[in-house]
Image (cartoon, rainbow, N blue to C red; front, side, top):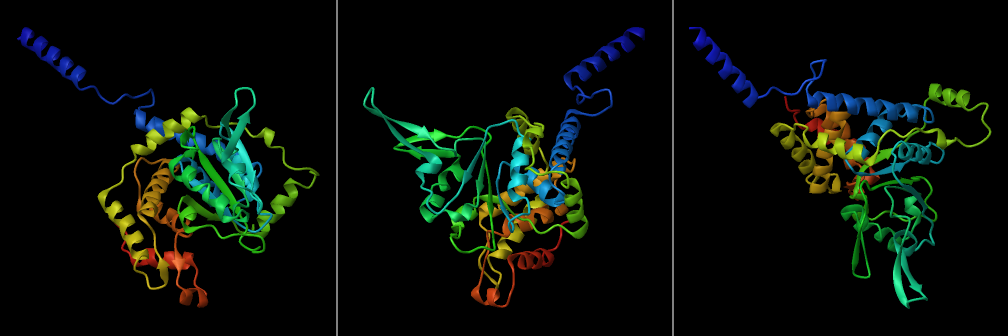
Length: 349
C-alpha cells in the first residue's frame, strides 16, 4: 500500500509540472495583475507631474494618457491661455523620447514639415534632409493656421507613420504621436482642417475655462513667479520600451461580444441620424475600441465595461461628425447629438 501511495504522489507531482499554476509573487498576484499595478503606478506618476503645472482638467489628463497608450494622435481645442500647449509639452516630457515642436503659420510649406532634398557639392548628388516631423512626439501648435497643401503633407505620416519622398519610404520610429492645438474662436488667418485629417486624430479634447476655485489655485501657485514654467523639472516616467510593454497589456484586455455590438451600434446610429450629414467611419469604431481598452487599463482593469465606452464616445466622435445645415441653424452641437445617440441605445449588461 505504501508503494501505491508513493506512486500516486509521483503522478500528482508530474501533473503539476505539466500544468503549472499561474506565476505568482509573494503577494499572491499573477503576472497580469502585476502588469496592471505597474501601469497604474506609472499613470499616477504622470498625473503627479502634470499636476505640478496644470490645475484641474483631470478628465483631460486621463484622456491624454489614454491617447498615448492607444498610440493615437490628439487634437486639443480651446481659447488662448487655457494651457493647451503647456499640457502637451509637460506630457511629452514625461516620456523619455525625442520631442519636436512645429509652429504652423500661413506661409509654412510642406517641405518645412517633412523635409527636403539637399544638393551635395562634393559628389554632385541629392540627399534627403529630414524635417521636424521625424520625432517621437510632435507638438503642432495652431495646426489650423497652415494652408491646405501643408495640411495634406500630414496625411500619410499620421495614418501610416511613414514619409514617402522622391519614391523612397522613410518609416517613423516608435512611438510616433502628433499632439496638435487649435483655437476655435479666431477665424482670421486660419484654415479649416480637412475631414480626412480630422479623422486621423484619435481624440479631440475641448479644454474650457477653469472654475473659480481652480482660478484662485492658479494665482496662488504662480504669485511669486515672473517667468515661464521650467519644464526641465519634469521627470521622465515612460521609455519607448515601457510603452511597447503597455501595448502588449492593452492587447490582452478582454472585450465581450456584447460590447463589440454596442460600439458598432453607436457608430452605425451616427450614419442614419437625421441631424447628421456625415457619420462615423469604421476608423471611428476602431478608435472607440482602442480608447476604451486604454481607459480600462488606466483604471486598473483587464476588461472593458460599458462605462469605459461611454466615457470615450464624445472625444472620439465629436470631430468626425458633420451636422446638417438645419441642425447648425437650430443651434445643435455634435456633443449634444452624440449624447442623444448614446442614451437611445440600450447599455449591455
